[in-house]
Length: 451
Image 1 (spheres, one colour):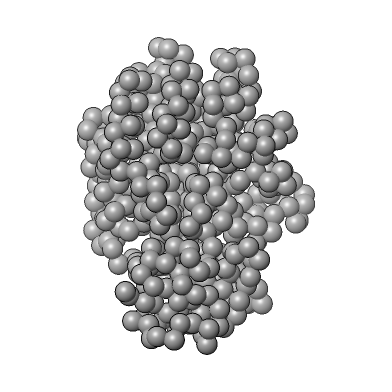
Image 2 (tube, one colour):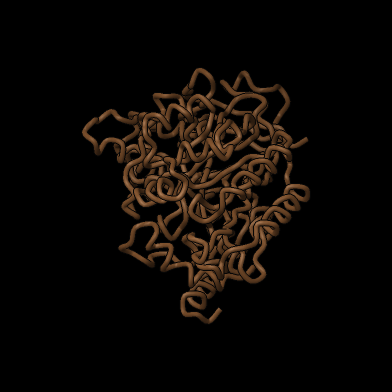
């Protein structure tokens, strides 16, 4: 069995039950599991196959991204001055021409961007299936690049002609959605600890699918014991649609259709009120906070402090690359911290709370007990950032907080499932210049209507 020793770690944030932060620490990895954490002399006596010195690094668990739309990296910086609904209406006509090649290439590029920001586990919400698009296009990208992946089979069934937001050209029949979702679960879902691939049932949003599909999707997910994900309460128009269409606020609607529970997480939740926060807390329902996207689309500021105080499970998400225009998960931790302070409280969110949401919080939201912390028995998902860099100069009195307060750096070392995939800041599972050139070519063709 292969063994890897990380030694002389300048600062190690374990995120364990005691939230220990260790200096001059070591971590011993055997195959894809963490075997020991502590001082070098406490490591297993046998020699490791490889030793990495991290005396110039801060080390923490791999970051967990709980919401994304990777295909949107093809259409960045478009619809620059629109709120959510108008933004979607401008982009749907472009996205209807997506093909499998677009999905595969954009997913691989988005995953590379995430990995270089310190992410080791991600979910992606693919909700549009025109032409030959399949969820397998993303699954193949994840398997090739080495990222731990929760593939969310999204869907839209409520077109404009039926009172929904998306044009009829990009919606599917509900029977086809449910049949394909079951097929994906039976083919790809791995529920075991250390799983690298899980399938999620994920109708897009209350304004793009019917009540029947929401209920049937929940029934399917629970019958197959997989998790559920959708968008909820993202902005004022989202809430108005819920009140006008269902006669209920988003939280009450979610409860009515079976979309609360510890197997459910919702993206955004910017407009949750105190009663809805209480509902989520009581039921164990999770939330993905997407600060950059919420600012970009002028959706508002999610009640993150109130969610955390109520002990709601909260993770972070970069959201789609056309509403964030970036995929730097450590950057989202920084934005989360700063955005909560805009209201006037300089301690509304601490750096350590932001990092906890990006690690343990994300793991909890995805229903994972095997990632999110560095301790014996956990999956070996570990990232390290160099401290001797321009952006962190002068901030080493608290190197962990520096990751959040200062310019978010790129990761220097990333280990996913025991494999060293980023070393000296270089991702070794993809040829980035070639990938970027291909991605830009596909993006240009798509936007120009040449796809």
